[in-house]
Image (cartoon, rainbow, N blue to C red; front, side):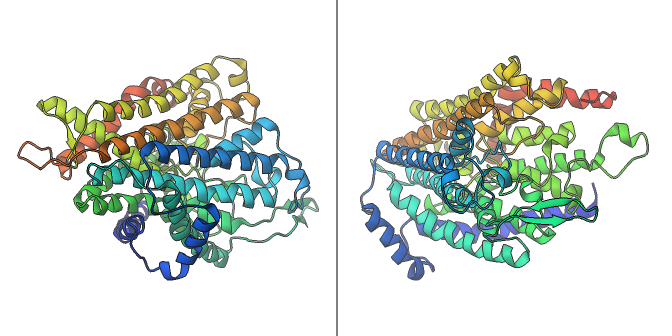
Length: 567
């Protein structure tokens, strides 16, 4: 590792640390119904939305009503995206004359963007028209991100309220997140991206003549508007197939740095918002610290592995790190940092091909997703995912000392633990069962690019990405087949809603409980001991669940690589 690379990682983390508190203060004020500096401008728009939708923002919902509203909104979102895709050939703003995507691909894409996964089994510039990119995909980038934040806020209310049978109003939380959070941030980011060279137009594709006299088609489109929300909303879907490695999406090292900051901005801010809304900011900083430990450990392993490069090439005197699959404009350090960030969050945007990483580098990106993406994670999803592990951590601690587990003054009882385990098992089962089946049937193995453990890793990565609602890919797997389109779509649905619904159930259960007084026997959940316990719970839960599968893919591939075996 070089000092320059470590400086880039350190500078990035310090920027995130500096932005966490101000973003958390804003989020706490917004979702506690307090006035913010944006209200004079955006409050009329919020009121208009309530009036048009028939929403009474002051009427709160039980967790079951909150979940029903969320599911109905998500189902309508899925239907609207699918319909627009299938009608693409008949709709305007299609200068390239693209036909409608196949039913299985349209189904996969509609599920993907509704669940905030943004898995793309297609090349955007050759498959989706401008209208589909804007009216379907970009709109869902806003909507699905706002849904995730709403769930996180409902869970925070579960911890902060006492003897209450409500957790908020889904429609109000959804609207506030979209209007006051994602809309202004995305507008500002899109304008800045345009100033840096990201394109934003509705022009037809340009045919250019190369120096060799050949014709090259240069895709155009409304890119900056999608680029902004794809990062801020931790969506990750690229306008172009090359995603953020494309110079029209990510033209300079400065835009690359800002995109990385945008991915962690809201997830990090939500940890501080959690502390403020529950009345103890130390609790939020404890979650931030646990996430930071896991993130920094991951990025240092990826950077170290990629900077060391392929040992077989090193023995031949070819140093300089593993540049295969890297974005040469940004280098090994920035590409390793980006890969760790995007798989730690449920973003999925990429500037390098993870399929070309060293086995250890690929291992970290896989493990980041298999933890449920709680290492800052997605907008909202990272916080409620980490709180899931916090519930398990205090339960384990309670078992060890023989006391009823408590977290923030609330007893953690059988219902909360069962719901947390349901969420963990659902995601793990979706990954492992689909991977196991795909690894032994022709429909699964027929489109794998590599043999041996690396080919197995490509399948494992696809389902890990889908169930974790990440959306990135190893890219060695050709996933645009009926089998993968349908099964990955199912994994995305399970990974999204079988975590959200149990967490809302936990929110409802906790909101109805009294807050207990702190005693000498209460486990402090804001100090180094709890941070270490929480980090250990995340690692152990992931290791116990996925270690056998990882041993058959990146782990064994690493040792075989040291012996000169390649796949």
